[in-house]
Amino acid sequence: MIRRHRRIAAVAALVTAMVAGCSSGTSTNQPAVTGNQDAVDAALQAGGTITYWSWTPSGQEQVEAFQKEYPKVKVNLVNAGTGNDHYTKLQNVIKAGSGAPDVAQIEYQALPQFALTDSLVNLDQYGFGAFEKDYTASTWASVKVGNGLYGLPQDSGPMALFYNKEVFDKYSIAVPKTWDEYIAAAKKLHAADPTKYITADIGNAGFTTSMIWQAGGHPFTTDGRNVKINLADPGAKKWTAMWDQMVQGKLLSTIKDWSDDWYRAMGDGTIASLIAGAWFPGILKESVPGGAGKWAVAPLPTYDGKPVTAENGGSTQSVLKQSPNQALAAGFVRWLNNGNGVKLFLESDGFPATKADLASPAFVDEAVPYFGGQKINQVLTQAANDVAKGWSYLPYQLYANSIYNDTVGKSYLNTTALDTGLADWQKALIDYGNQQGFTVSAG
Image (cartoon, rainbow, N blue to C red; front, side):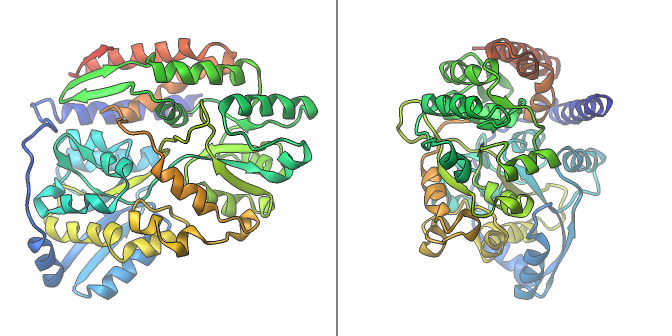
């Protein structure tokens, strides 16, 4: 408990510092800018040194390949940690006014917070807006904040159903196409073997927001410093009415996600399926070797059987305003996510945001041994096309995630109505936002 509250305090301090940094009136609703890539091309030819903060597994290989292609450029790769560790260090150097990397990896959910403080370079000034046609609509929307473009999408995480086919076959469970069928399958499995659960969920902010997204919800809207929060909109209500049956029916495993027990449970069939983003195959292959040949992939169940999904996860690379070599740094971002760096990322089990790679027969039709030879990318690339439109995160989403367990998490812990937890979360987020200088209201 102490460690968790320290993390929450750290995130609160991080977001407070970020908000304070924009209290002078910085807004993402600034006039749109345009430019071309001439300065970027010239900088790559002239060379120089840049620093890149990233936790991407393919980072070192990408840097080496980039330097081989552009021998006049030196890239210093730094892994500053993941999650809050990375963001706390990044905000500290931004606040100090020195020490920031030229390029940093930033998750889509965190990007608005850094763009809001005017810490990032608007890449429209280099003509990068021309790349919009190369990316899926959902990932492109994720790197746009107000009128600015603050990165190029690295990957995407359209959600799908990953399931243990061996368990499903043993208990004669058909792959569910609707959430009603999924709940029925959960009941059937747990009744047949009380040690087994259809899935695990102890409460996770990212999972909750993605599920509300899939249900058609739009709980967060931002216009400059004006924010509206409605965690009781029709999409949120649709999700809670369905998922309450899982929570209150005690049909969910309470094994903590990302723990050793969690991985073991996926390997031995205790957890029979996971709802996750398209990056999940790499996790299974690396951390659940005992599941090889047992797992399969299917479209995410829906409320009416018609295909629709949401994103869960994903990152971009952004250029920091502190960088003395902004054009060169932009050139590196372009190479990473719209050039030869994409291939190396995909080879490390990354899932693309680029339309060309999502449509590539070599990628789409690859038979994956871990999944019994199933061509899983046929399912996942279709999911990328089925992401519901119009989603946006809060401009203080990291803080929102940090207090989730103290609000919605209690509904999971006490197996009570999720609507109550969402109402508590909403109130806390409205109060916090107003305290930090936003104008936040319900609705």
